[in-house]
Length: 452
Image (cartoon, rainbow, N blue to C red; front, side, top):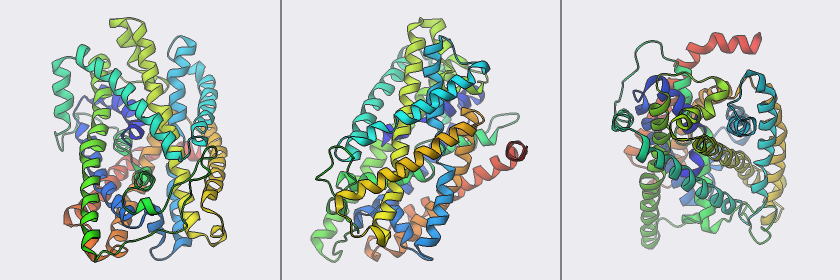
C-alpha cells in the first residue's frame, strides 16, 4: 500500500510545491498523511470485524443503497480522472524525443497517455488474486524508486536542503510569503499518502490479505489464474463475547496499528520527502511548466552529474506514476464490485469465482470513460490539480461516514475510542476546508474552462 501511495502527489506536486515555496508547507502533507492514518484504521477496523469492504458498510447505512449509489458515484467521478497515465506519458515522451516535451509536443504526449492508460489494465488480468499481482508490482516499484531517490539524497543533497525539508514537516501553520496557489496546495494535500476514496482500497487490502474476518470472506479472482479463488456474497462476523475472540481482536488491532504507524505512514512520508529534497536542491525558485512537471529536475541533475542521470530520473518518474495508475484502476473497480456483489440481488445466484465478471465489466466501462477523460483534459498538471481539489471533498464526507459506520454497525465493545473519532472529524474539517479555499481562489479559471 505504501508503494501504491507513492504516486502523483510525490512526483508532481512535491517538486512543484517545494521548488516554489521551499519546505514551508510540507507540514500540510505530514498532517494529511497522519489524518489518513486515522481514517485507514477506522475502515480497517470494520473489515477486521466482518470481512467486508468499508464501501459496503457505507451502503448498509440509511437512507439505503440506492441513495448512496448515486451519491458515491458522483463523488467517485471526481477521482476517476486518469491523471497518472497522462503524467506518466511526460517522462516517457522525453526519453523518446530526447528533450522535455514542449507545447508543440502536446499531441504526442496525449497519444502516449492513451497508450499507457490501456497498458495499465494488463497486470490486472493475471495472478490468481488480483491483489497478488499488484503486490509484486508495487513492492518492486517501492524499492527501485526509494533506492534511486535515496541515493541522490545521500550523496548529492546538501545539509541545508535536508534541514529545510525535514523541518518543514513540523512547521505547523507556516505559510510562504506572497501569493499562494491554494488549489495547488489542496492538490498537494489530496495526494499526500492516498487521498479521496482511494483510501478505501486499504479496506480491501485487509480482506485480500486474510486479516481478521477477511480470511473467511475470500477475494476477487483474476481473469487468468483465479479459478479456485472465491468471494462470498456477504461478510461474516464473530462472537465478540468470547474471551478468545476478544483476545484475537485486540491482536489484530495491534497488527493494523503497526502496519499504519510503522510501515504505511513512514513510507508515504519518505516518498514525499525524497522528491521534495531533489527539487529543492536542484531547481529551487523555478516554476515548472505543465508538460515539464513530471520530469522537471532531470535536466538540472544531468547538467551536474552526467546525462545518464537524465534518463534515470525520467525512468524514476515513470515508475512512480504508471504502477500507481494500475492500483487506482483496481481501486475503482474493486469498490463497486464489492457493492454490487454483496448488495445487488441480481448477482446473488452467481458462484464465488464469478465476482471477476463484475470486476472486469466495471474495468471495461472505466476504460471507455478514461480515454474520453484524457481527450478533454486541458493539461496533465491542470488535471492533477483539479482531481486533487475534488477528491478532498470525497475524503471529507467519507471520513464522517466511516465514523458513523463504526459507531452504528460495530458492537459497542469493538467501537473506536475518542482519539480515532477526533481524528476522523479533524480529517473531514482539514480536507474540506483546504479545498474550499482553493476552489474559491481558482473559481474564475474553472468557470472559464467549463463555460468558455
